[in-house]
Length: 353
Image: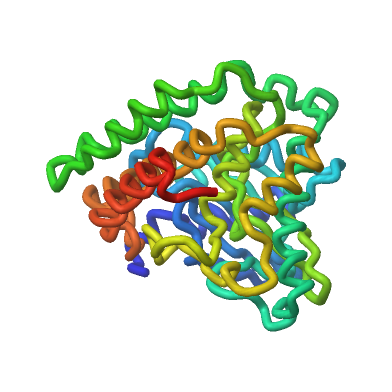
């Protein structure tokens, strides 16, 4: 991490003054950048005896709606007294004089986020099965939230959500292509976008949706059996189509029969091992818990991969413009075309559920 990039993320003196004003002064503090994320930036702050997390967007121009951390703060706070496990929020700030952007502060939790491998304590077959069950059961809890009752009735427009998703991600891609197409083009993505526009389901259930629900956006408690204790990264949350959430989660969940991943750097593969639930089993469990059917499954899985490609292309634009030091971003030159090919396989039935 270059010092220059870190200084673009946080003015330590201004942040310390802000925290002192709102949380009280302390004798000792420490601020560190968390390197695992690939979208919004995360800072870990030790503030006296408190362990805190700060979330802010990356520096530089970003595509509209892609990094709304105050939206994340709002929904996380609203879910505090529901069955959905979320971290405790502390404060949100829209004063850009502090660190140059919106940000919010939340309490840090202790546990494991499963990214590269399973913890040794989860390696027993029944624990492996429970990981998938906890993941899909928590998604069902999100989709069961009475969003009016928790103050999120104006949080989005569920009618027409799926059509807007197709349109929005087409626009995100167009934003990225303004710069990236000077380096290389991805014509298959235009074909995929056309197919999605021609196959948008006419109707869908209306629920709270997370927008980025996947295994490495949740935390499991220490100990066994696996217990999911927090859902993170709510920046894309809104009211919309729960099947889109499920399709997104499934796009990250591997079966042993799957081809090589399109983005190996972002692909967790340990759930291919014996004991883990298959995608089909996860879908059946979600249907049982929600009462919804996963209709139009090829559409929703294709939409998920199209969105992944959109994210990848935005990453690539930021790299080309010098707005990130993330070593993953330049690899999107090849990874996005691979995602486009995956989307085509799903459309054509060559990558089944």
